[in-house]
Amino acid sequence: MPRGGRGRRKPPGDTPEFGAGGQESQELTEKVVFINRSSKVVKGGRRFNFSALIVVGDKRGRVGVGLGKAGEVADAIRRGGELARNQMVSVALKDATIPHEVFSAYGGGRVLLRPASPGTGIIAGRAVRAVLEAAGIKDVLSKSLGSKNAANVVKATLKALLSLRLREDIYKGRGLEIKKVEAPKAPEAAPTTA
Image (tube, rainbow, N blue to C red; front, side, top):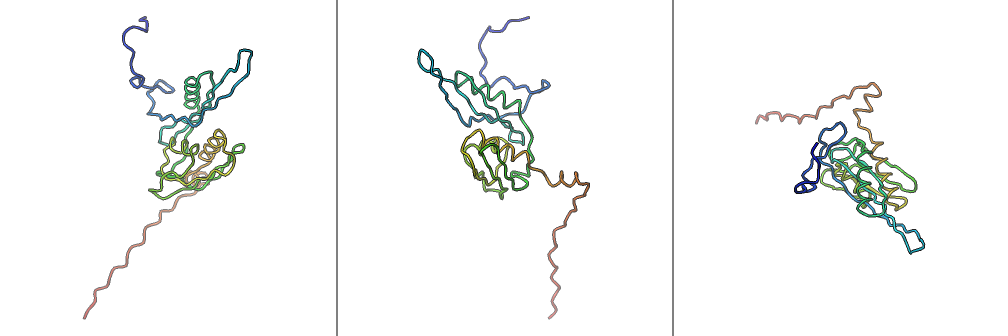
């Protein structure tokens, strides 16, 4: 078996990323939402520890959140990214926005999300915006009403996205059929005789 470590190293972008089952996974975007430094006082001085809140998404309705902890910032970001990739979930989207208004809370974080017309953009704060962009939502109105703690705001946003349901799914669960409504036709002008 050939050993690694010989020859030039490949740039990090050249290696394909493999998901579960060994298939090449689609392109994922990774965003660092918040980095926290905590310190512990020891005999020789202070010892620092870092935690990184990472959001990962494919911009097609799949998103995950991870909180990585380590002695170095880079290690914390890497661990958070791995956790986020392992905990990715699918959310219901309607074109580039959300199907309906939703309110969600996690701990002290409270988030309100409203669908918006095309061209509005993402009207949101930093933590909420990271989750919505990673999920692939382009037009939405949001308001963070509770705590400003980034971890709780991100988790409240994810909880809100998970509670979204499409009309088709609701009707299917109730055993109903969606009635197609035809657009009204313009009345034809009657020929005038003079």
